[in-house]
Length: 121
Image (cartoon, rainbow, N blue to C red; front, side, top):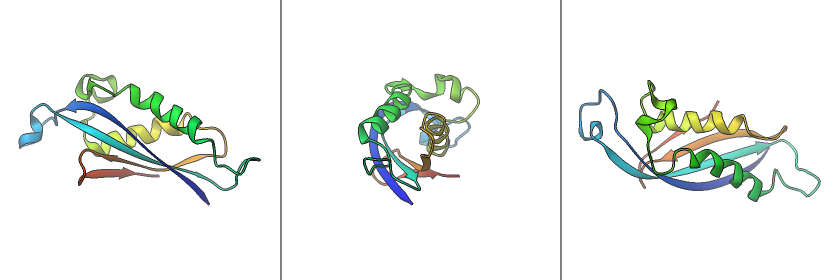
């Protein structure tokens, strides 16, 4: 199995509904997103896929979240905008946009240098 590792970032605010503590209040993060893409075989150039193409797809997804208040987005109207739920949402959106033969291995979303959440299937 071949894997590509891509890291990107975005900034957004949120608050955790029904949480008892500081995170219940509005606060922001400079989120870092790490994506692992997998393929069983390489293309004719010897790549899983071109990094530029992969980054373009990921950037398109992250632009939806960048400089927003996550709680106001349709995706989080009911779903609590936790780091865990954000990782799962990014995974699902990315999965639907990848070319045949390439799958998402996992998505890790970091809300700080020391705290992140991973989603994979």
